[in-house]
Length: 314
Image (cartoon, rainbow, N blue to C red; front, side, top):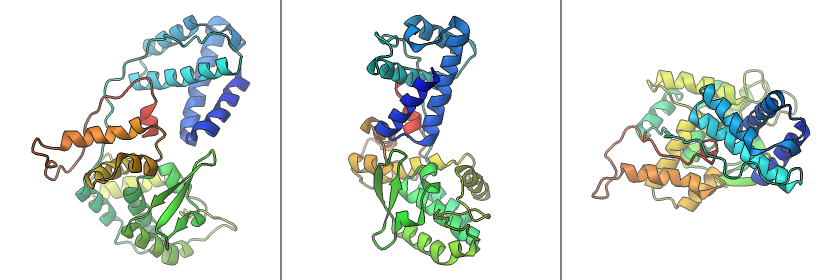
């Protein structure tokens, strides 16, 4: 049963280019489901899977008071897996057909306003040490490109072309996308590459753009801690890497970006995911067409579809 899960995940990476974090979540969800049906029903082969097994698993999640969003994500993974089992000829009928979808109430993409972004960057701008130059470059790059934190920390030096003003984001399945760099990001990255990165003790052959104090690639967990410290210094609680991604997306639409261009830059597979930001922007526009004056925080709750793991793609 585990082999089928691994083959499914390999295909998902190849076909959809999901991030390592999303793949890890899928693996955990499917392994939990496999363990449940094995222990509860004695299942030893996926060919024995029927809809009653899935319904029982949903009841199990409800009994243990899993959040609606978590239950919906697990069901999305299981439905995709069942579709794969049918395609692979491992089962006949799809047991997930007609399965009720857990209702997801509200998803709240939090996006801080331009002033708050400036405060955050200002908190990292006074330190001219290699670490300070690195942190400033990372924050400005994230805030002006909308990269996922995993994409930011995965960048190599070769992925940045300051002369062309762009960087290349490489996905796990080999797909790439080109993301334009704002003038502020170009300047901050040049400053870091010329004065900051050489100050780190680099491990032999290390190609990572952003380094930690040991000279190896900075992890996304390491960046989270850095961001948390600067957010606290700027008086901005609850700022996450995805807060900056949401902020970039909303700001881009305010500045007149086409939704398709934003989808391409953000790396969304589905245009419906990018449409979330259009909905948010519409709620911030007054009846006379003017944007809400200095909203300070573009925080808004948006109804999300339950069947899609859309929150993960954002």
